[in-house]
Amino acid sequence: MAQRQETTINRLDDAARAGWLYYVAGNNQEQIARKLGVSRQTAQRLVSLSVSEGLVRVRLEHPIGRCMELAEQLKTRYALDFAEVVPTDPDAPGSIHGVAIAAATQIERWLRNDKPTVMAIGTGRTLKAAIEQLTPMEAPQHKIVSLTGSIAPDGSAAFYNVIFNIAEAVKARSFPMPLPVIASSAAERDMLLSQPMIRETHALAQQANVTFVGIGDLGPEAPLVMDGFISAAELKLLQKAGAVGEIVGWAFDAQGRFIDGLTNDRVASAPLPSRENSMVVATAVGEKKVPGIRAALTRRLVNGLITDEATAEAILAAG
Image (cartoon, rainbow, N blue to C red; front, side, top):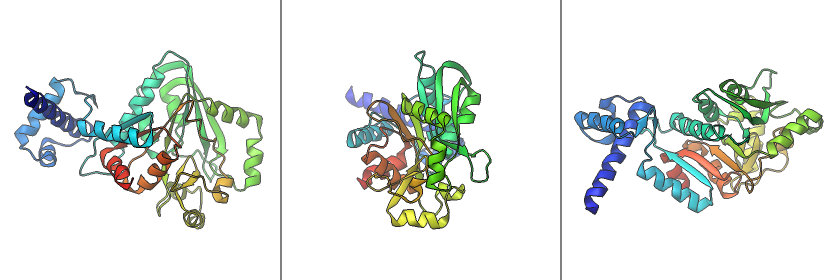
């Protein structure tokens, strides 16, 4: 009986994986067969089974066993309050698509709550992709506040700032941060933050019940440099100081400690809300982000994580 039950569970896991590869990652049956090491006919049956068993409804509803195991390991090792791990597409290990859908699902769960909620939101490519997956809804009882500036170095709207995108999808009160992500000087930053409207927005961010942020790496293709917020020379100084990652512009080292001085003296973003009184969820995926993710988890800069299998395994292996 136990063996039969285990076989059924394993088959549902295979069906869920096949369903994810087909409906989320966009693989055809031949590609699925190759990735799962089965015949094309078996791949077709597994995809059909994922639908007939109710595992797939555009989004994957069946949590794959391995993903659940990795999520529990992350929660245990880093004392996380929430962790979700999605499958990794073997042919696209750096894809953010699955993580974006999982993040969108979590954001929607909070927004569908009748109880008024303050949601703080960060920035980044994965979060932007998640917001694009949101189902339009009416949620006037909630407030959504940006943690970071919405102005790019050239004065235009920052491309990966998502507060305006979420405002379009969700009819809730939104509070953007009309500031540069990183000011030109510490004096300018202090002057901007002294404005009453900015002080009120920062104060609202600290009241957040839940926060969603991205984690940026500080390697050669660091988003802060690619998007023009800091120079290559400033990146080298951060690296020399031991910085391995950043959240809404705040750079931190391998122990999760914020770097003293340098660009952190000019960051106009709000501080991260309290992890003791609220949920702060990071959405991050990819090998180059592993040092930053691990540092953020170790220092408890965040108490929740949405990532994929390959990234989760790398984080745990580095521990």
